[in-house]
Length: 144
Image (tube, rainbow, N blue to C red; front, side, top):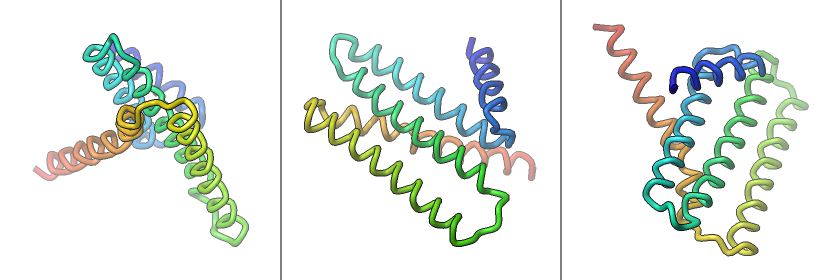
């Protein structure tokens, strides 16, 4: 079942323009981490709103990561000029502002607990650490 999910997710990402295998692996890992952590949160706290809030934070992290990777992929081969740098900075701050507004709405308007929201957002860091560790292990295995 997991292999089928990974294959379908890889196919969707490839069709969406992510032709670099390592980038697809990282994005797939983020989605799988989000799903796995969400299932674990649901199993541990199934009678509370905590898993739902965690899932919202994780979804925000995945969407942010996806948008960032998609734009980085688009500009990777371009030559840097003033317009491109302005575009990069604008998109970064627009994404940051959008995320900040969503967090403000969730925390102050909807009064959701901060801990599960932040833990959901931190799934992107867990994914990057796991991906980096896998890269180091793979590199060491190739050297041996």
